[in-house]
Length: 626
Image (tube, rainbow, N blue to C red):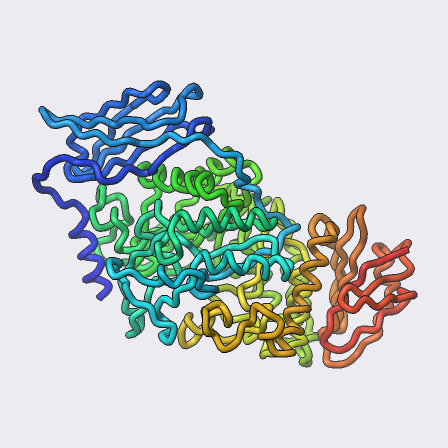
C-alpha cells in the first residue's frame, strides 16, 4: 500500500498536454505595503500558465524575474514592492501570441490590530483540538463537495464538528480558568479523504495534512471565523498561537496533485519512511544515510515530505508564515515536527518572522529524550556545527522527567538516588546548555501523548503536584484541554482515546463541564486547583520573571524558589507517602530576611519558617513575607 500510494503521487507529478492558458491560483493571495519583507515570489498556477510572458504595470511594483519550472502549469514571479507603493489591485498580465490573460493581485494596507505579541513566562497556554472542543455552528459540520464528507461523533476517528465559533464562545471559560493564550492544532484546510491506518479508516480532524495553505478549513469556519476568533481573543486579553507545519503536507494538497517539479518533494527510488530517530542529527559519528533517512524520509505515506532545500518551496513556506501572522494577527508560532525540517531553512524562516514581528515567540516540536538533542534545535551554548536561531521549543525532556518522577510519588522509589523529584531536578540542572531556558514551553501531556491524569495512575495527589510544578517552575506552561476537568485515557490502542470531545461543547451533551454545575465535586476540585495557581501566576510577576533556585532533593523532599525584586515564592514537595518535617536552615540563602509565609493554595498564614510541615504527597506553594 505504501509503495502504491507513493507511485501514484509521483505519477501525478508532471502532467503535460495542451490547454488554453489561464490563471486559477495566485499564492500568496495578497501582500501588504510597508512590509519589511518586500520581495515576494508569486506562485502563478493554471493550465499552461508557465508558458505565458508576464508583465506588471503598477507604481512601486517591479517584476524582476519570471521563473519557469518543469511543469508548464506554473510560473514563479519575483516581485519587489517599493516603500512608495500604494494599496490597490495590481494587474498581472500574461500573454502568448494573440492571447492575453489578466489577473488582479491585491496590495493591502496594514492594519493596527495587535499581532506577533509573543508569549512569555507570564503566559499560560491552553492547547485544544478545535474539532473536539466545541461546536458553535452546526451548519459547517460537513460539506458534500469535500473529500471527507463524514460527520459522526460516535466514531472516534471521524470529524465531530467542533469549530472556531464554538471555541470563541468558550473564551470566557478559559479566561476564568487563568489561561492567557490559546493554541489550536492546525486550522489550515485538510481536504483529505479518509486514510486507512492499521485497518481503521480515519479522518484528518487533527489538522496536520494541509491541502491549501491559504484557506482555513471550512468545517472550522474558514478564514473569516479564524480572524474573528483572534479578534475576540485579543478583546478578552488572550493571545493566539498558530500551529505551523513545514515538513509535510497532505497527499490531497493541490500542488501535490500537480507537482511544480520533482524536487518539490523528497524523492526516493522506493518509499522511505523517516526512522524517527533523533540521534543521527547530533551524533558526530553518524553516517550520512542515517541523517538523510531521519530528515528526508516521509513521516507517513499520506503526508508527502517537502524539500525545503528547493528555493521555491522555501519561499512558499516563508511567505505563508508571514501572510498568516499579518492576516490573522496571531501572536506566537508553534512548529510541528521541527527536527525533521531542513535546519538552515528553519533559521531563515525564523529570521523572517522575527524581523517582521520582533516580539513573536517561536517554539517547535522536537520530540527528543536528551538535553543535548533538545538544545540543538534552540539557541544554545554548545559548540554544534550548526547553530539554531529558534528562540524556544517544547520541553520534552522536562515533561519526561516530571512524568517519571510523579509516577514514583508515594512509592519507595521516590527517595531513590535518581528517582522521584531527582528526575525533575536533574532535567533543570542542565539548563546551562540553553541560551534562554525560560523560553521553553513546558507541558505534562498533549494530543500525541497519554493524558496526564492516566499517566499518574488517576492519583489526584500526583496530579496536583504535577500541575504545581508546571505552573511554578521556569518556562512557559502549556496545558492540554480537559486536564483541568480530569479528562483521562491512554493513546493505546488509538490516539482518538486522548482526543475525546470536551463534554458540554455540543448542544444536547448530557453534561456541560464548562460550568461548575455540570462538573462532579472532584472535577470542580481539580478545576479550582488549576484556577487558583493560574490566576496567582497571572497576578504575581515573580513566577514569570523571577529566577529559579532549586535544592538537591533529600529523602524525597524537593524545594525550589522563584524570586526577584517583587517577591519570593517557595515550593516544597513531599513525594513520599508519609508526612515530613522539613528543617529550613539549609535554605538560608533564599530564606534570609523572611519570617513568615502565606500558603497560596489554602490562604493559611505561617508565622514561623524554622521548619515546614509537609503532608504526604503534597506540594506547598508559599509566598514569603518579612
